[in-house]
Length: 251
Image (cartoon, rainbow, N blue to C red):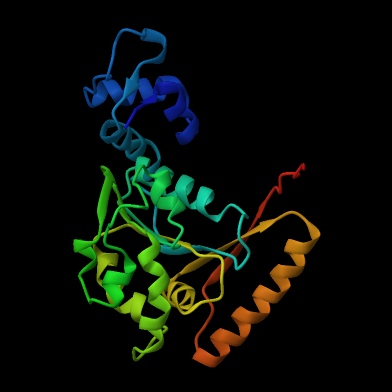
């Protein structure tokens, strides 16, 4: 993976470039290529060291498990999940991101083909495989549970299992000791799989387009969440509404 420049690291950390330069000198970090002196890039593992030093080492984590959710497609869930998971990993945290959408767009965003027969959440739930056997490393600090069309069969499996809304929690709860953050990109539906994800989540990020139909859909979604958690006799996770600008569509 191509590294970052000092200028970009300074923007992420919200510090001055000299602060980044001082940290690089302190850790005796070498650039990937010294030919372009104005835009020298540094390896991701070194970027993680620098950013962790500048901003991450004193941060407390209160919501380690989060999901990106909406039953409407095309609102930007995958893009935002991709950006936040990558950002957290570059800050020095250990991050697991889970593609829970059979379309596998998050998987392809990280450079893996969703046409390849990777093991997925389906194998964890249906075949009771360990998540460690399914996880694919992306770069230092960032791991992925990929997705492909095999995930379309998971609804039948979940429907036949006891505690069908808690199978993700049962499988992934031990991983909270290994990762600082676990992020889920969900599929655009109200499904047993998505119920599993939101039951396990500490923070539910609902991505909403800034247009009338999406706002009306948000009301329906919030009503559904209220009914679901009431039936489960559970407290809802903390919910963030993230407005995402809808691009004008032209014919």
